[in-house]
Amino acid sequence: STANTAMETILKEGGGRQWYQLYVWRDLELSMKTVLRAREAGFEALMLTVDSIVNYNRKCGWRSLR
Image (cartoon, rainbow, N blue to C red; front, side, top):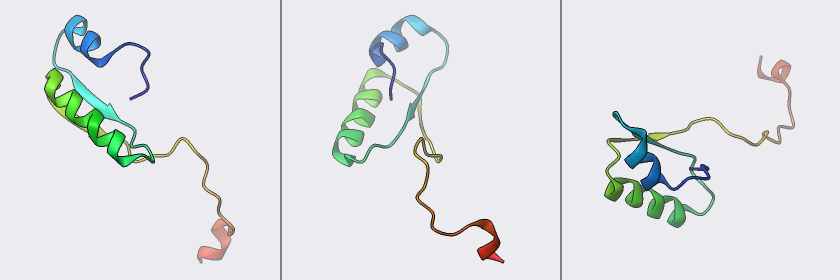
């Protein structure tokens, strides 16, 4: 999702089996356009990340979960 090289170039020059990893953005329409672009380019699978690159704004600590 955040490579400096176009996904089509990576797919063409990378060789082997290739999956596309998507970091879902706040702009869901742009995320979906990117998924469609990856599919059209020929990636075999889509991997969605489940972690976050932004720290959560939590008001409670682990102790409050007891």
